[in-house]
Image: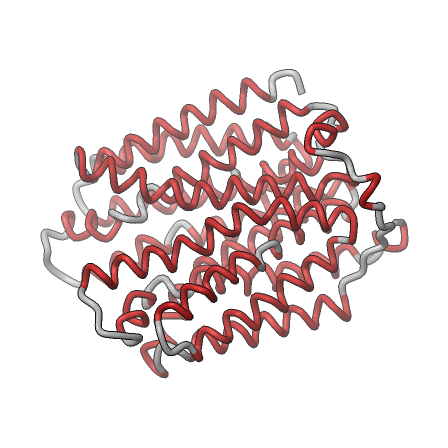
Length: 397
């Protein structure tokens, strides 16, 4: 392991690039998925919306179900192998989406994309188990910077490329980039891993008996779920809210895109810095600070009078985001023995994907039952519940 520790920074930078590409791969279709589906047949608007919903959700549902399996295999076969499987599989699958001739083929490939999930979670596991303990927070924060940056730029790049060269080319370019991430990992990422025989792999119950503070680990799973529900709850209504604030006039689509993207900027810039701060003053303190800020900053978004006020508040949402998921992952890394860390990060990835699915549903239900502003109030309540939850489960740690 001492030899691998010499390579941990190189591993971190290569896998951060891979996380960046994986983030693009999951988010780039957002602006044009419905439009692409519309070219694959003769559909009504309702049918397009239905197929787009199925295509979007299928990836995350399958990813949530399959992530623990890949985590378990990573603990027995090595994290690098699972990262290679994920990057190669996603590269081929996403690239193949440029060749589909009907919506059924697209749905099958979107489902397969979920099956080949695991790049991000196993990148976190590999870095968490090879980086020096005093630098784990900073390293995981840097990986998160790659993921967030990819998720932020994905819709923008996908929309621009689709506008210039058509809907099929973004899939092809993303597939090629994922294949480049595969070869970079294959040749330059180092992992000194001793395989654990399948017969000696702990069962689900035994995993949590090995962990010294299982309440913290399980608590972080729930925290991840709530963070993602809160972050995604406003996605269905953000453009409608902007339209309302602009009184149905002006460049609503452009401004909505800016409002959506703004949180990603401070999050990408500050994730690594907050990770390093957590290494110095305590990860739990940074996480609680992020939850306090999130609770406070979501409340006034329900009462803004114009879109500029919303933009400023969304910027502060990005600051709180930078203090949340990276700190959760660091707490998981510090409380998970190396022999089960792959499974722990796999379970956490499942909770993250579940939050991605539940959040938009919650936002749609709340907005249709009450108002757009009520979604922000609900999100603030969720962040406060999360704050109390984290304080409770980490009180004795």
